Each structure stands twice: as structure tokens, then as C-alpha cells.
Length: 215
Image (cartoon, rainbow, N blue to C red; front, side):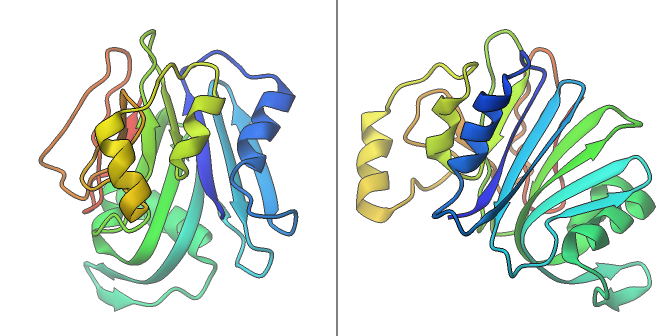
């Protein structure tokens, strides 16, 4: 198991807490991990060592990507990346802004931290094949992870099991739609017509080119 977790707008974590959340994404000790903290934004990622670098930088933008990007359908036609996918997405974000996701072709989940705009965006492919689960603490902020079981490891997450969706999860290894087996948490949706908002930061679950954004 590999993936991404992160938090923004919550109380800072101790280093051992951050490490525990990142380590929980690993299937074994063979996976590579990386962690990043800037201000109130923390992101951790676990990847297979043979995969391309999961982090890309371009100007004031950092992108973390779990998955594959095969190409981009933009104003000048369809292009195929000639650099690692995360770096490619960072370049596209700098050129097109958050709407770059609309032209991506692949299976992926990702995070963008735009430091100049003080914005964190979560994005998935059009089918939401790699969902990002998220939780909004009552005092603001956002905690997210591609592994729903990692969410309760964050001290800002207060939740319990939803029996109906837990049965679905055990039977099918997933809960369909945007609900999860954990109460008060949701999964990113491929349908951008179902926006939801937090009191402190604005957020829109995504998957078809309209990324979840928090400011």
C-alpha cells in the first residue's frame, strides 16, 4: 500500500506523529517515504522505490502525485509528458492554474501546494479511481489521506464507525459514492457539481478537472 496524506489549518504535529501517519501508508519497509511541512501545511507520501519521483517543484508550487499521468489535452492539442508526472503536473499548474486537471489523462490522486496563493488543492482523475478521503475538524482546517484507515491517526480527527458503510466496505473493499466507513469523513467525488464548504477554508470535492481547494 502506498499513497498520500496531509493536513492544513490544524495544530502542528510532533515529528513522531507525522512519521506515524506516513508510515501507515506503507505495505512494508521497502516503500520510500517523504514528508513536507511549510507553515500549517503538512504532506506525507509513500511510494514504491522503482516509481518516478512523486514530488514536483515549479516556482512557488509543489505537487505530490500518486499514480500515472499519460498525457495532457490542452489548447495546443494532446501532449505526452517527457518528465516525471509530478514535475509535469507542477509545470502545467504554473501555466494553467488549478484548471490544468481538466486536461490530464491517467489514473492518479494528487496534492498541490501553491505558496503564493496560500492554497492547497486535492485532485483525482475523472473516475476518482484513487480517492482522497478527507475530514474537516470542527475548529477548521482539513485532514486527508488516500488510506481512509489513516485518518483517525491524526489527533484532529474525531470519528467512529458508520455501521452501514462499514458493512459495504468489508464486503466490497470500498464504500461507493462519497461516503466512507468513518463518520463525518468523505471521499473526493468525480462530480464537481456537489460542492461542500468548511467554515474556515473553501473546499470543492473534485475529479473532473475542478480540484478540491483550501485557502
